[in-house]
Length: 433
Image (cartoon, rainbow, N blue to C red; front, side):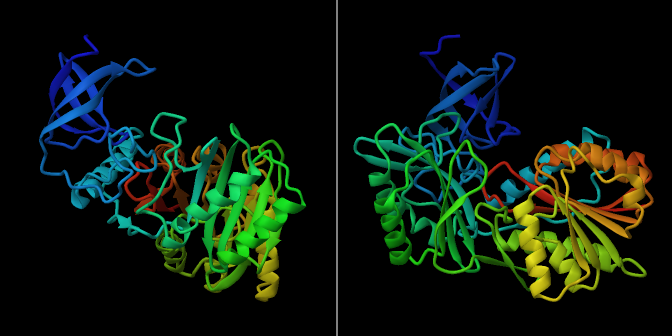
């Protein structure tokens, strides 16, 4: 294969990473930023796994699914290539169909029926309320943005079509803030979250924060109405609050919950509402309703508070002590004594069947790796209703297979697209014993 020659390709479909897929001499070629039906020329090479990869050189004929991407940072141009999105160039109908097909494929690999998938709930542009950026200090200033796809190169963002405008508006001020706090060669992460109290900023960096730096940070927060700024060392747990102009809260089920620095929030309010509706609706449909619910991997109470407001006694379990403390504080303030908490690492110490059998329902929302051990124990339990929330169809399908083999029936799956134009998909699935 001559890597200096442009090859004409016909794109047949989209692969699992959102790349266009074509055939070249009997081998599949993966072409980032290509769309089904495209005819194009590409320069071929091999990636670290030995797959053929095409870099678009010229679009000869666009396919019917191709549209103009809304973001200037998206695409194969050298100055673009932002790794935050993969599918801005795909028409909405084809994009949604592709996301659902990825879910169906994950289920099929574990012999799970695909006829119980509901419609895709898609969060709109400009709705994402949290983001993690990379900052890189150069001689000429600070680069701040996402990494380019498959690279450590930072794309210096001037715009982002998926984020809330309040977060985009802080990009330039944060560059100006970090410039005197860092020196050339320094790197940092900046984590932003738009909470119900305003924007929360966490700077993850091994930098000194002296009196002068604290004053600059206070001035930044005041000038841009930032609710809180914290600093976390990349090698140390916990975060130091540098300035808190007002208490940072998130409204969950109508309850104001304290948000520890860097605590997990669902990516969009729309996605959170869709997931919570599936969780509460599934348990409300029980006759009689679920009175005792275990909320596993509960975080700060995304599902615990809507369930409690619906009348359930909720036992929230999570490994995060700060998150559980925030949940407990909010429950006390709202006078919800039926909400109890238990700090517990469910990967190392999952709830056993005896503990699970005390509940009418279990909700579990694990990290991307899933919860194979805990799901296996739920499968052995007598819990009447289970709701699985997942951000990874592959690990969900593995865990769901365990529930099915344990005697549960899959009622329905509600897919939720909170990470617009990315390859990620979330879901909530209801199982009945």
